[in-house]
Picture 1 (tube, one colour):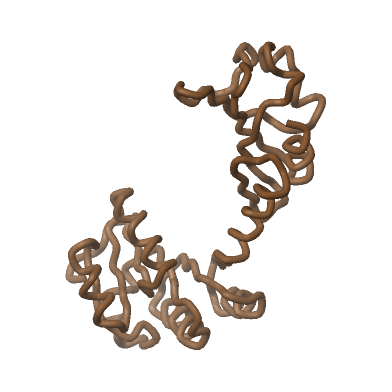
Picture 2 (cartoon, helix red, strand yellow):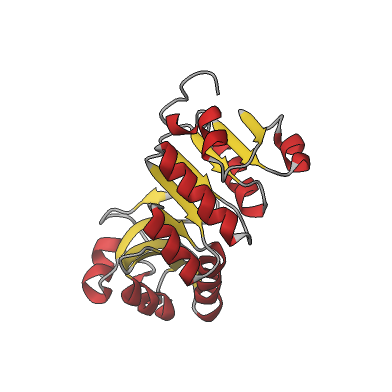
Length: 221
């Protein structure tokens, strides 16, 4: 890129399934994206959809410098099954001075190496999605996200004991150790949780807290 990219611009390496989804969402959110891929067909496909799309070897420090990669604060290494290319691209981004690197890993060992060579965030998309689906299948959660520190957020039905009461009257936090963040009534907008917020039949609750407590709470709904 000839000019210095905006602070929230993102450098993306790899336009496979994971990279394409990431690029598409970033573009929708209004971020400038410089995408790099060695596949000319993918480069052609995305050339009209992103700010800049370049056919280049992202494992080459010289190529990255020529593209101005070091001017980016954030980069995503979205390379799929080619572990060598993933590691070399991450290392090259470290060498050109990218401050914050997010990298996709396909195995635990791959992830550990990525961390050691400088990736600030390692993503295990298949594993994380598998865990999410398992929670949704075996429990009564509509959606589930777990964070690294044993904290989770879930969308789940309201327990019978809370229906017909306000959140203050139901006292779910003192009973179950979870915080109700919001309430969604079918056909109505999302409502931020307040003590006076009523819980109606069929309502969905957004709850947060320690993962084990969120799981136990969802099991009773």
